[in-house]
Length: 224
Image (cartoon, rainbow, N blue to C red; front, top):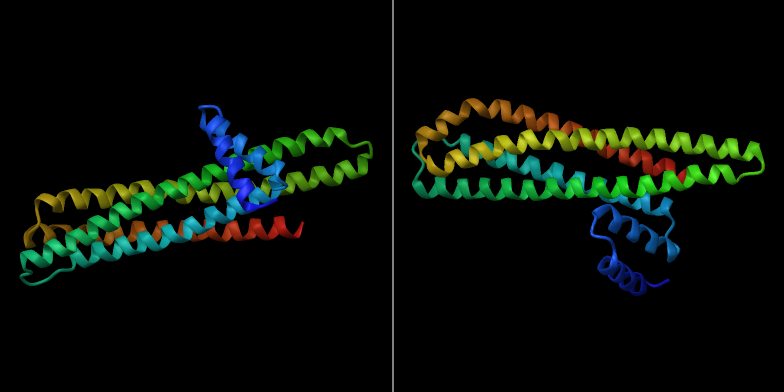
């Protein structure tokens, strides 16, 4: 199998797949498997992708917080140019955070699609065993893998859910400053800085928990 051939096959599958996203996802999984890319391998890779996006999102939210604190921490009598520059950086950082958050959501959806296909196939194959002792071993492996996966998915979704309220708060600050870019307005936001910082810290902790769960899941899958 070559990367070029697989790429061409995936492009053709995408052009022919059903209109529903789930249908397209199933088609892509099947095409990859036809080229020797097993569902198990696909799941490990998709979890790795989701973990990497969480790492990037963690960095981006930390950057957005730094820009927000830089704006609210302006003291004295800043010039209009200085305020405009800091606002522009905050706005860009907020928009980058929104984009990164969506990429995290997309990667989690990819993980769910592959996991559903893998577990459905694995469960169906249990009925094909003639040796019940071997079947029992496989059934236990399936249960252990599914349990670890559910723990991982829960951690990823918990982190993802915390992104929305943080993004909403950043958006509020950006919208407010857009029409109130002056020292008085900035001073009025200083009281919210502590709460925003606390919210981002909680989000970062959830993200790190999801990253750790992803690493544990990948390690389990690669060792079993």
